[in-house]
Length: 299
Image 1 (cartoon, helix red, strand yellow):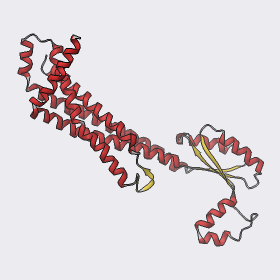
Image 2: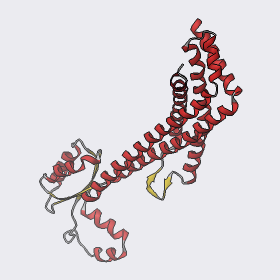
Image 3: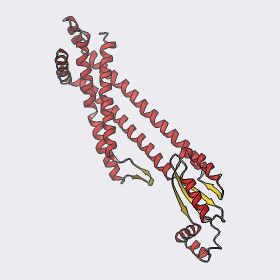
Image 4: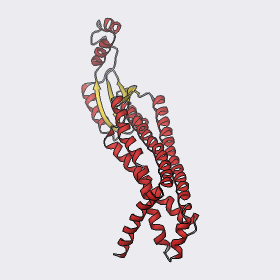
């Protein structure tokens, strides 16, 4: 019970201290707010970049062309073998007649030329359109399918896909590094700002020591005060994330320039980011206060 009473008193003193030293508290809150806004924007951007890459990767299609003399039984056998592969998500068969009809619909010139073709004259090939689960394993999957009998050509834009994988890996790493770096900078700035706040109250801490207050008794209100400052400083970044991102999503209808670049749906995404921002603010505020009291003031 004594611990709870002490904790309750520390929380009360922390809130009083925030308002009693309002100008210094405002400086800390402003620093926390500005840095957390940058962190929040970076988190939103990095997550959307990762989302873009997944959407584009899902859009990659492998096309498998078959020999002209492939029978229906052999097509059924190939369909089963391809579908049973671990990395194959979807496998659709397209006959050469379907391919001809699609090309005729897309272009009037093709329509004029191909309209005269009979089934025997059609030089196109039957094919499979394949979606893979893991684009990084697409080369291995293509090699496996290429080894099957009656498979003439396997095409998935190998060079383009390899470049795409490398680019997205690089972008994701840069995004993660940027967020981590910003969090570290945020910690540094906030800790130093809170140190200045607490340093200005060195006399108050000295008096507490003279009357026999323990280190724990002295530190606890300051740590809670840092947590309160972090929480207050996270309010504006949280509102910006929730309302700002939702407005951005609605303005662009969830798509940037092309259907491939789709924004992450605001719910529940904005709430996860907001929660992360609040937690970062509170933890950094607590660390800043604890560091200032313990090391800077040598208490």
